[in-house]
Length: 344
Ligand code: TXA
Ligand code: MG
Image (cartoon, rainbow, N blue to C red; front, side, top):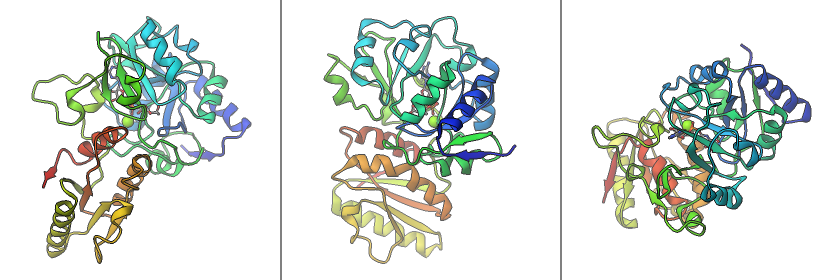
């Protein structure tokens, strides 16, 4: 199958909507990452997403809607959820709510809940309106790879597997949406993202964070969000996450880098722009500014993909603080590192 990449003109969006209504797949930009969309109410169409991504069938998808009203036929929305939709939609907040009967089991992996979100991107919203159906869309990467934040990333993973990619340029947030479980008494963040815990607490009296956000699942423990079980966001090289006092982090990264050089393994240090002079003579890549963690969120997946492009085997990455968007950054880094973390 030939994969076309089109600028998001009216005609291209109309064609994308025709493909989705006809049971096919289209990759499209959102403010978080690129999504791989299919008609959420058509189980056969949704099945194609799992095939294109190589995604385990027990990992449910997020259903995207053009308006908060469009979520009403899909799930039971209580007053708390309504408040959140008013405060954060369109935006990077996905709500897990009790599902209604129209949701085919392929879309939500047969769970009692369904994930819904209204994205904040003009192309995504125009596409959703043109489709006239809710669109199930996971990130448009091959399962396990870092999520795509440009149309080029999508093409790397999906070339030949899907007919069309709408190119809306780089994504503004760069990490996937916050997934908030609204089916429990206290809402629980099962995946941190662009809407931070601090932002949610401005609207809700209590918000918990699932324990598995910053640690591996214990043996036998069930993931609230099945996507958090798998090795994820992972570059092909081995990533070590280094945290501690700045001087110690620097010394450790330098030491590990030299060790890799001695054993003739290609290494790279993922650092912050403020530390540009710390690692003279080493191969480095900046993941953004410590003082502006939003830049790290935006750059991270691109940097992880660059490690594969450069065939780096040993990746050393400086940790960030876990407040605000930092919680989402560290959640992705822990998984990219397969929990190989050095506290120095
Ligand atoms: O920003 C985003 O959320 C992007 C864009 C395309 O909207 N989408 C995205 O989808 O990241 P995906 O499939 O890569 O991640 C969805 C996450 C997974 O961890 C999945 O397990 C969880 O949400 N999830 C979806 N439905 C769920 C449900 N009913 N119960 C528990 N977890 C659910
Ligand atoms: Mg994903």
